[in-house]
Amino acid sequence: MTARPMREARVHLDAISANVETLRRLIRTDHAMAVVKARGYGHGAVPSARAALAGGADWLGVVDIVEALELRDAGITAPILAWLHDPHFDFAPAIVRGIDVGIGSLQQLHQAASAGSAASGIPDVHLKVDTGLGRGGIGFADCEAVFAAAADHERNGRLRVRGLFSHLANAGAADDAAQVAAFEHASALAFSAGLQPELRHLAATAGALRVPAARFDLVRLGIGIYGLSPFDDQSGIEFGLRPALELSAAIVSVKRVPAGTGVSYGHRYRTTSATTLALVPLGYAEGIPRQASNRGPVSINGRVHRIAGSIAMDQFVVDVGDASVAVGDRAVLFGDPAAGAPSAEDWATASDTINYEIVTRLGGRLEYRYWP
Ligand SMILES: Cc1ncc(COP(=O)(O)O)c(C=O)c1O
Image (cartoon, rainbow, N blue to C red; front, side, top):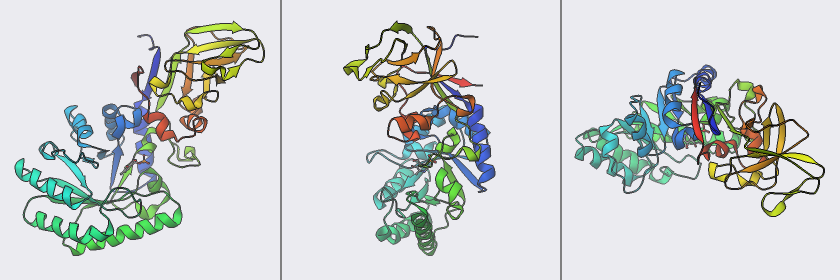
């Protein structure tokens, strides 16, 4: 067996497959899209996509066509939807490689139709409506015009409207209900324009779990497939999801220091008694949030300690007290709490952010290892 890398992001692909199975059991829809944008939320897009498909996902979701092409280049043939586009991007490669595109404006609709003619193909599009997130998507004022234009393109064989979709703001039960109602209204407008989208989709992980009325034909599952909670209160364990990523590094130096020793830049930490300091070779260059300085939890030999002082670009220090720690022992930043590791949620709390950001920002010199 090869030695573990000094800095390791270990991704348990069986956990991703199992999480998809669990979510599919809990959320009974005809279709489940695994969202693998942003390098699979920092887990690796291609391996995560394969694991999710093995677990029962039948669609993949990404942000842009570049991400979609990466999946196709890896030999993944499952249906893919990409929904955020460079204004100057040519849709032709998406059409040629069978990638569905999300369309959020009249201009994009026409762009997709003319790219289809140029590529001698018929783009499959999903019209994206803004039902209340206040972000991208066709505003209600424009729905009728865009739907009419889409129906016209469809009649003339310039594109197919396969989907109608929107995204929830997760702003509470009343807002969820209002968005579901707005989506129904948009659907009625689409039907009366002559469109028959076979896939209507609104919910991501949170909505899929908590808002049954938002499930429609397909749910777009992102954070949940990686075993993390979509909820602000960070609940989710009750759904039986298992975090897929464990972040760890080998301790590279250990030293005993006296009371009063200042630690790391700015001496934002000073030892209060004689103690042992362990050096971990991970820093903000790997995506470890500097905000977690003096706060981030780290498990070493089964005991959780706190980071001492500022997280630097390449390294940070842990005050392990009188615990017995040696060079080469593993420092686990987060992983599966059921196995005793701190969670990505613990790191989110320590960094005043959300678990999504903790995993997605990982990178730098980390080496990824996929299990099994
Ligand atoms: C349009 C869209 N659908 C689905 C998702 C997946 O969301 P989640 O990770 O909360 O399941 C996202 C992620 O931000 C998204 O932008």
